[in-house]
Every structure is written in structure tokens, then in C-alpha cells.
Image 1 (tube, rainbow, N blue to C red):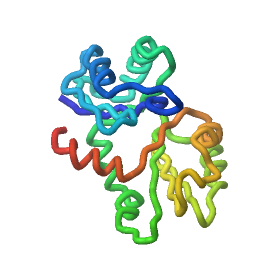
Image 2: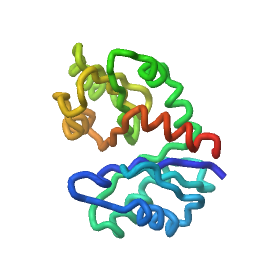
Image 3: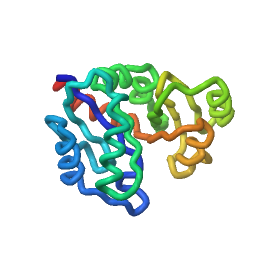
Amino acid sequence: MPRYVAFLRAVNVGGRVVKMDRLSALFAKMAFDDVRTFIASGNVLFASPAKNGAALEPSIEQRLERALGYPVAAFVRSMDEMARLVEHPLVAGVAARQDGAALYVAFTRRPLGRDATRKLLSFNDEMEQFHVHDRHVFWLLRQPFHQSRVSGALLERTIGMPATVRNSTTLRRLVQKFGEDS
């Protein structure tokens, strides 16, 4: 059975705290198998007979909103997609860097259009660079994340759709730990 990971936006930020055991129970009630969470930032791994992870997103969002009382965007990727993502040269390359740079990956619903890509790339400078690949935005920072002039909200306004951001180190660890199960 295919394995997926749901990256949830608005979980354990801004005072909206959800215990990971509750999140696991909510996913189990959605009839997903082998549900696990990975760190307390809204990363839920599960198995489902579904062949398309993106098709699961609307029902996950609806069920979570009913249970939690607020909207939670879900970005679902298969473990195969995640393995390819962490093999991307930007992700693999940042792990070998010695200059303190960090790489973040923003998950989106669909690939960015030409105008959104152009607007996003206009933020590139010596301290941060954006690269767009399929349904992912790579965000290379040469300064602490909190010092970036681009916030998550500005990123979403610029690209014109919801997104959730994870550190590439977290993504590599997730694939290392759970990738062999897929």
C-alpha cells in the first residue's frame, strides 16, 4: 500500500497547539493505516490505497477543520515523491555546504505560473534565493530564517496560493527514517 506524508499548515503555530497523538488519532479515524507523526510541526505519515496523494487533500482538510475548529491546509506527497525531492541537487547540495546556509522547501498545491514565478524570483539577492520546481519552492537562506525579509504570508501572497514550509534537514531526516517503509 502506498505511503504518504501530509504536511499540515497552521498546526502548532500561532497558539494553535495539537498534540501529535491526537493528530495521529484523527488520521486513523480517516481510515488511513500505519499513521505516524514526525516532530511536532504537522508532519503525518500514513498508508492509503489511494493512487494520488493530492486527491486526498480536500477530505483531510475538511475532517481536520471539523475536528480542530479552524482551517488546516494539507499538502500530501508520496514517499516516492519525497525521495526524489531530497535527491534534488539543491537539497543534496545544501547538506554539504559549510557556509551556514539553510534550505527550506515550500509545498504548494500546483506548479507556479509564469507571473508568480517571476514575482518570487524578484526577491533573489545575495542573502536569499528562490528556485521553483514543480509543486515546490526552494528557499536558500544565508541568514537566520527570522531575519528574512520574506515571511510565509508574503510568500503565499506572492505565489497566489497556500503553502507550508519545512527545513530541508527535516525532510531528509523524514525520508531517512521512513523512506525504507514505502
